[in-house]
Image (cartoon, rainbow, N blue to C red):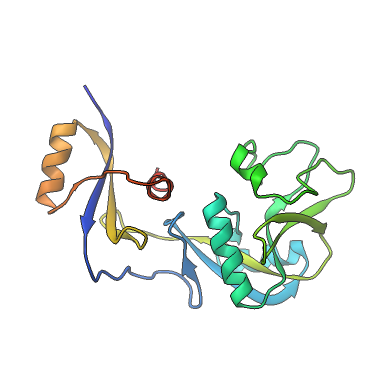
Length: 205
């Protein structure tokens, strides 16, 4: 019998998402559970992280190439040359949360990284190329904070690339019953039609 986390899909032509993020922040279509906010003040990597903590978050970490491009484009519009993100080198190449590097993560780096370095180096994103690079952690740069959203379990989340809204129910059921629940919501079970949509949907899991 098929069991799964139920993800519903519903089309709303003029839907506007409830913005429960800090003023001046924005949402990423690829990480819908987070808010992001750029800080123009130039700080070193450690102090930048402390400012993000005051928002209840931490320095941002792009989850994929699409999100890296999104952040880089926004930084370019703000006339940033580069900005701090949540990565620092160590003896073992892992992400900041300790998880191993994915192949896609390696593609985000320029030709100078990532590497195991003897002295501590922190990661920044070059706005024009959206590529990551190492910088001295004491350098002063603007930075991007990432804050987890407090999303009610019954909230629909829009994805601008498709024009649809999505909703997750955190319980298991059969495919047949899941489809009946969707019909009661005037919707259908999700149907994936692009890599972007797949990345967006898996961001809920």
